[in-house]
Amino acid sequence: MKDLLRKIIRTGRVAEKAPPRPEGAVPEAAAELKGSVQIRHVDAGSCNGCEVEIASAFGPVHDAERYGARLVASPRHADALIVTGPVTRNMRVALRRTYEAVPEPKVVVALGDCARGCGVFADAYGVQGPVDDVVPVDAEVPGCPPEPEAIVGALRGLTGR
Ligand code: SF4
Image (tube, rainbow, N blue to C red):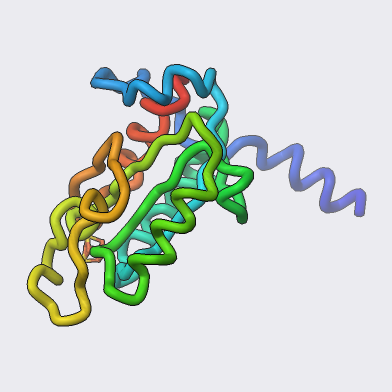
């Protein structure tokens, strides 16, 4: 136990130094969230590339939690939804219900080119459409997949930190 504590103290913080807060438009609803945003992630049909980058954004190097963004398990505990992938026919109702379960004020972020416009899955037989065909979208993060720095930047836009 002592060895472990010694190692923790010796290692210290491993996160990258915080870059300056990115400039850019902040979704109107985010202004009411006041520095702390609880996020429910919904994979509406992603290839999982975007999920790998989200995991990286919340990992020890980029550490999105230090800016007040936190992933939660239930939409009822969330202020924001991050949606990845094109919305598949099988996920349309689930995404709509998840959106309705989030209390007001709420924000929806379409993360990745598929969420924004179906990307490489456009016209696939199982695809319903982009996220804003199913729920209102307040912010977008472009890229296939977006880099963790861009994801953290968008989250800082929501938390204002
Ligand atoms: S944007 Fe790219 S990485 Fe993300 S779900 Fe679509 S194909 Fe996969």
